[in-house]
Structures are given as C-alpha cells and as structure tokens.
Image (cartoon, rainbow, N blue to C red; front, side, top):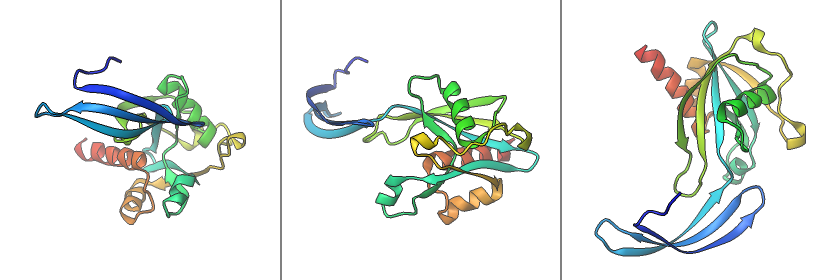
Amino acid sequence: MSTPDYLKVVESEVLADAWGTLTRHRIAYKRRDGAWQEQVREVYDKGHGATCLLYDPERNCVLLTRQFRLPVWAAGRDPLVIEAPAGLLEGAHPEDRMRAELMEETGFQVSELEHLFDAFMSPGSVTEYVAFFRGTYHLKDKVAAGGGKETEGEDIEVLHVPLDQALEMIRSGEIMDVKTIVLLQDLALRQMVG
C-alpha cells in the first residue's frame, strides 16, 4: 500500500518478532491545520482472523466456546473466556479458515456460512482485522470431537447457550470478548428488524 501524502515514516524498529511482530514507528503526521506533528507509536501485527457465530433456530441457541486466554489473566480478569469460535487466517481464505476452525474447536461441520462484514479489532495499536461470519447449526451437524488442537495448547469447551441467556451474559460481564458481543448483538438486531 502506498503512503499517503499526510504521513512520513521517519524510522521503524522491530522490537519483537516471535508469534507476532511488534514495531516502533516514528512518523510525521500532517494535521488538519497543515502543521506537521511527530509521533511515536508501537504497532503489533499478528495477522488477520475470522470468527463465526453459529445459531440453532430450532432451539434458539448459539454455539460458543470457553478457553484459557493468558492476556485476560494478565489484565486481572477470569482467564476462562467465553467466545465465538475464531482463528488466525495464516494465509487461508477467511471462509476456508473459519470452516477449519469450527471443525477443530467445536466438531461441527456447517453447510453454509454467511460473511457479515470485516472489522479492525483495535486500530490504535493492532493491525488485525477480522472477517465476521454467521452460520446455522443443528446437533446432527457434529461430526468430530472438537476441543481444539492439543499440540497448539488448546483445551476448548463447547457451550450451547440460549440466545437470551447469551445476551444476558454480556450484561453480567460473563461474556467480555468484543467479537462475540458484536456477533450476538448483530443476531439480536437482525431478529428484531426481521
């Protein structure tokens, strides 16, 4: 991507390059009043991802997962996070990656996924954008154990939660994952407006 005329990269330094890349950038940014301002920002790049909310219309349930998340513990919260299935793209097409993640994490094979939108998760410091999907599932669609890949340190519990209860779990603070909140609210809104 080309650099816009209101941005000059003065210096970039890679600070860490393990699971993701943390880079410190010194930039000059042309403000709306025409003045140039120098800024130093750190940007974390771990790739892009996909997430999906599976919904069972017959039971009015959603399929969520619960798994350990170290950064949540480091922030002083319960590290067993309830969230929609998700994964990093790692070069794959978003829908293909999402189907693979659904199988790995939940054991469900879903015939149709609908791409809803893409969104940046934390654009002030992280490059990641996520492709959001929704799909329909039925208990008969379970074809594998799920639970994640032990070799990747995953130990994922699959939860079937009534939609009303899942929405209440947002209000109570049991669900704090933003991608899951967005997907649940999107589903509720679509049901309200038809």
